[in-house]
Length: 155
Image 1 (cartoon, rainbow, N blue to C red):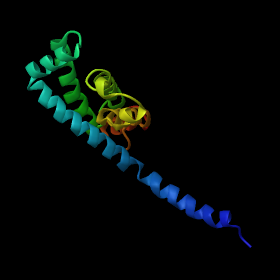
Image 2: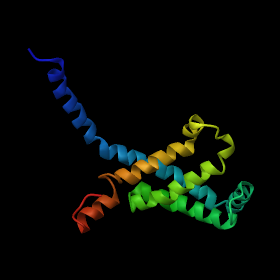
Image 3: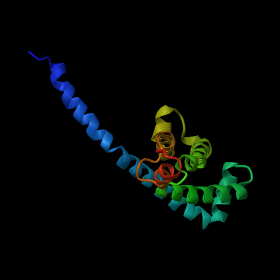
Image 4: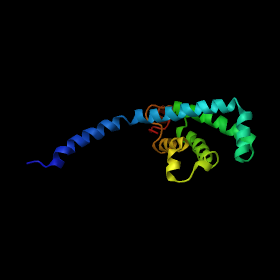
């Protein structure tokens, strides 16, 4: 007589194998989701640097004009890098920093506890960016193609 665990074990293995096959698609969706978002917000910032500079002034961010340019272009360029999967892990770093700064400045007055933090869109983007930084871009990326071709490795 087989136990319940013995009957469940092959089902569990098949389910895990099936979900593992979806990993490249999940990483692509994550990259596209945050990449397109940052491309869009970066584009808006780059084309409204005076407004972004003024907003940064109200937040007390040092060198608001310089930081408006840095944030706008890093969102635009790093977002594009995520979409393509080019220098993916490196591209997450400025965006992670940007989300941390956004939470500590623009969202600070709304932050009263853990549940406020996890309710922020910026926190969700931060979590996805950290996941991409740790897991890599996945199989469907320029990084993967270049890594395989020039370094005989998967990213």
